[in-house]
Length: 330
Image (cartoon, rainbow, N blue to C red; front, top):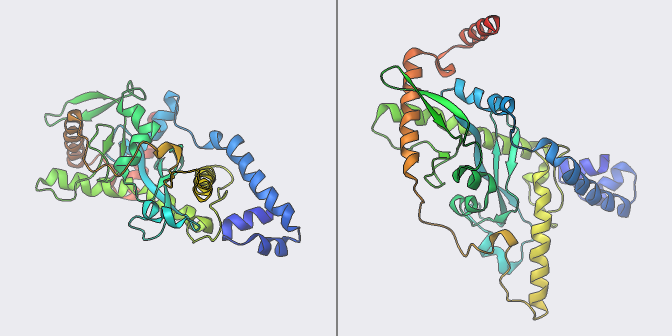
């Protein structure tokens, strides 16, 4: 067990872990793969899951609501995992702005940096967010109003009244489609309301990137180049399990490349989930209802700033007093 954790945590070789733990190479190598496979099969669904009950949904959205962003269920972004033994025929497909071959996942987390969802299959590193999101079950279900469509939240209007909206959304960067379920900040804005809204939305959605940094710091296999296939390099429960899925995708690609060498393949291997994506999606898909919700969110945040009811506008002492007063009322 300690040898397996050392390999995952320090990105060490199996032989080095064997020397430190005084165990056999074959035993540790077999145990590492079987143990991580057991973790994914038995523990993954227990810790990496979407909120289902009313209490769980309220717990996730209440924090964003206090910050001025009601209806936000999660923060979402793509994480790139280095593929150290990418085949030369696949380097162009897997090399993006990082400059080296990667596999990319779309990951969603809450403000507590707890992983809520990871896309089922990884994608080549050269794929952009617009392409990957087409294969993300979470985004597609919310976009089609099949998930969280009945969840209500209230937004303040200019006249002081509130309006009830239905359907949760995710906080993302500007690389996604303009869908109602994907709210992003604006880089350039002449309107002061929109400018302040985007200024505060940007650090709020950064929690998912902080999650990537914490995972890379805790487990070196997430950050450093590996000379082996991207095998199981996940954590015990939630944040460190996501890389296990790379093994299935990369083993599938390796099998396809072996078929090519034997003359029975077509020389162009892709993971199953990306077969339908011949290239990056350049055109931005636009949903008209997204602009109405975005304007309502901007106005709500402005009204919260005016009334100083947002936690951004309070000091730590004021926030503590307000929390204590709320607890006494309850």
